[in-house]
Amino acid sequence: MARIQISHLTFAYEGSPDLIFDDASFQMDTDWKLGFIGRNGRGKTTLLRILAGFLPSHGAVSAPVAFDYFPFSVDQAKTPLEIASQMDEEGQIWRFLKEISCLDVDDAILSQPYSILSGGEQAKVLLALLFAKEHHFLLIDEPTNHLDMPGRETVSRYLNSKKGFILVSHDRAFLDGCVDHILSINKANIEVQKGNFSTWEENKRRQDQFELDENERLKKDIRRLKDAARRMSDWSDAVEATKIGFGPCDRGAIGAKAAKMMRHSKAVETRRNREIEEKEKLLKNIDQADDLKLFPLPHPNHRILECRDVSLGYSDRQILSQLSFSLHSGEIMAITGKNGCGKSSILRMITKEISPLSGELHLASQLIISTVPQQAQLSGSLREFIQQSAIDETLFKTILRKLDFSREQFEKDMISYSAGQKKKVLIARSLCEKAHLYLWDEPLNYIDVLSRMQIERLIAQFRPTMILIEHDKAFVEKLASKIISL
Image (cartoon, rainbow, N blue to C red; front, side, top):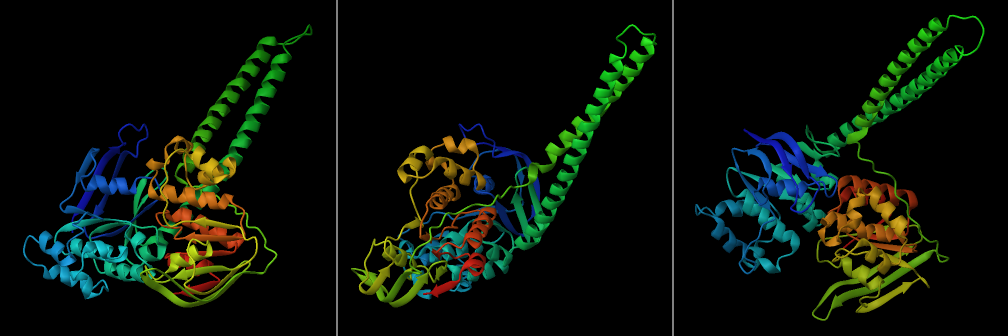
């Protein structure tokens, strides 16, 4: 057991005026299983890349172990066994075979070119290669984006049996299953807490509630102080006014009394200003996750679509057969299953990008559909994107602000956005579209935990007619009224 110490870390990307880290300091143990969370764009991947030595920074990192980063590049033409042999300096490939056997993969993939493996299989191979090394601390950056739901459960159990890693993930159930500490990049600081995500979430809720209650108390105090200062000033002015006139009076005494009251008024004002400063400092670390809105359209037909004995596939292969289901207004249907089983193909069939090989698909007439694709190449300005999408600019930007976009990001080229920020752009576009049916393909990939919870509350409140493909177990279990498991 040893300590990794990060001291006075400061970093900004070249050409950017914004600091990602500003004199940040924290420490962690080499035996910890550390979950790493924070809003998109806060610097999670940046921190991992600094620790791995990929990015230069100001500050000091003291570590008694070597850092390894996931994911990393390998020769795509080689097999996992060949890659392991190439990386194994001590000639002990048995360590890799031992690790990969714990990750529920078919032995046949070990002799296949890495390039033809699925994203989940590639992720498992890379993890096994890293954990086969000794005396290394692993920096694991969002492995769940490549894993289906069964794969996430397998990798979560696997990581729970290990120690000595930082894991960036936004999947709550996944984190709860395999971490014992949480490293969080908050709005104003970086902190480390013992426990899993659920423990951190409850602690954060209590801390935020305390600050909100304290803020409410301070606002009442400030109103009271302002009223007292105003009354004191009014009294002082009234007393001072009695000096004016021709009647007999002790004008010196009146002036002294007025001056004394004015000094007291100034003292109250100074105290009030200190209270205001205290209030401004108080809420600096609360992440506002304001509720979102959706505008689903009612459809005159209760039955939105019906699929009967459909087979789907492409010219070289059939993906699935005898698929039958129906979707009614207000239902939220989740499609689950392993990667490559045809989930996205079902959505492509509904949007008429592909046709069934056999069977029938019936859609309600004049059906308006809004989609969130699994992947999209975004570049150029937000203004151009808004014009091309024909959506309301004010509403769109309001949604992005609620999803933690700063106003400065509105002026940047989208190509510079993080993967999570790009996904938020696609989700915000769909939320701006009035539709009868929403088709969302893995909408939560790369999306931070707080934004996931915002989106979850949104769907639970408005109950749009929706088909979604998602591997976040907590999200699906909370929202889906119907599940198709392929």
